[in-house]
Image: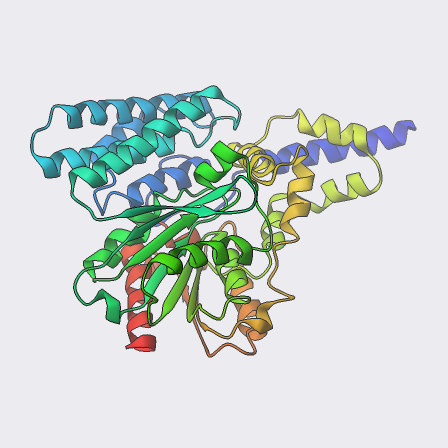
Length: 422
């Protein structure tokens, strides 16, 4: 390469490093624990679970005080230590309610502990086992009714689901089916929605598909675009052994905002679909994380510069997103992850959705572009009804998945279900 070419490449490299290290994302409400958006967002994620006894404010702040931004090991150590402490507290507690609550809090801290670890770090497997053990022990101790279901899925594989039957009168209400997204776990959906639904008498079925939870960790199944396959397998297995509900409402959280509508496009058994947040083309999310000049470098075969950039320090969020993407999609190149996201689009199937649709979005969502909700609305040409709600900063629900404001988005969802299905 000529001297001028190296100069251009050097300028591009500096620009890329600046972009990667520049803080991104909006403030969540009035609370900020870290300058880095991803560390701050994940802290608020833990705090969001405190409402349904998934954590305690004092315990969270004690753990956060020990964490250094960008230091995955300090994040792991603080949360795993807190999980062990609360699990030990549960072991010596005799009151069943207090014991069960403590186990659920320990689960939340164990779930948080593994988040920033390298996907292949052996500590992940160990903390994952603690995570699951604490969760189901907590439910058992609290006498929460649930049924774990193994769903056959292709040769030698299975998906996992958990059914939480509602109380008296639940049969007259829609069955709510829920799936998470890019990094969520099936068990945390209990805190995000199941506990709230139970208080209102709904039956809820949650599940994890390829690229998620134990299906990824234990079987190595990675994300696929045609989500109707795992969703249909779950419904087939469940309905084969349970009474058919009058209505089925499918909720997708985070990347599930694409997965749920995609499944609804191919399954007439789904009467209603809720996307929070609404995602029309997940590729647009990926484009927000990768600057255009990086694609330009690849398209023009500047492999040396790309290799140089790959060894530059990155923001914690960028580093995590690349590693988690390669893990959950089964890829070895960060840019290939961005390419994989381009396949997650509702564009070719949105007009097939005939269900009632509720779309939620936040004005400060640092993952999903604001225009996504409008694209979906205009493409749902055969939906029975379409309702959209955009939460602004003043409402407290402007962040991705309305994190930090569960009561806000849940009240919107339950009002919509009641209004739509009586």
